[in-house]
Length: 391
Image 1: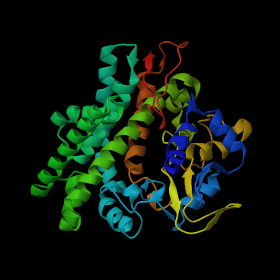
Image 2 (image 1 turned 180 degrees about the vertical axis):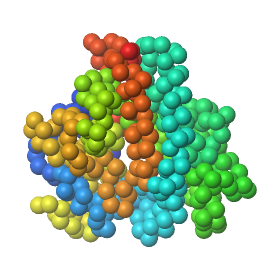
Image 3 (image 1 turned 30 degrees about the vertical axis):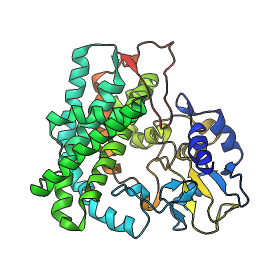
């Protein structure tokens, strides 16, 4: 079926070899900036395209001729989960994003900085107290990401552990029934938070949105925005932090520069973000009319999957496709582009800019506890299953 070409095939080609694109994606990248994932087997077939070129991806994501709405049965279903911004098209997307962007303003992020610094310090204190070796996936990645995201949303500390477990189980449980049960528990709690915020809005993200927009944003939208930010933001942040710790353990000399002479590597975060690209691809876009991208004509009804990982790597071809923390302002699309450019980027970058340098100072000799043992990766997006590090 067409959605299997888009979703299953699109995911499979993004399996990695450690930090790098795997062989399937490398092959498709070699075919040029536009390649074909598959063609629907029907009288009027539609094509599933994969875009791996940097400029071509910017062209797709900057165009109003593609829909971001959920695909179902290979077509634009016209159905959107309330509050899930990545599934909206204008004008609905414009309206909702306008209402929820304020809490991510730079001035608000600066007020949150000291709280983030304390969260990271406490997390590193806990790791040091445990003593090496330590699995940095739960103890660093998830610990920092979920606490920061929950605090940002205004979720009480006493509730955060249960909420985090429910979120993780809704994605990781092997049993379908258990995943559904965990997902229902997660969404029920978010609904309770929305109701509580309506009664007494504070200065957290929920409270700011309610105070500024009132009934203009519905409870369903507020619930969806919160679930989306907690689910997508917390998960993505956790995966990046774990991958960043792994990258640091394997590139000690480069991260020593960040620790000892940070002025020598002013663009270090852009390079780490570009190289890791922990969200390898975006959900497929569907063409609402015929449109030319690069040298190819995308027909109405065709779908396009944007490979952010491929674009971020092929933009530096040949031997330049390597991790280099001294690289000057590396261009990347790791946070997307266009109207769906990552809403939470200011929060994520503040966490990364705080957490990675703090890690280099606290554990300057960080290393793999079992260097000869393969690091296992789950299905994309970039999922380090366990990361045992010592110092």
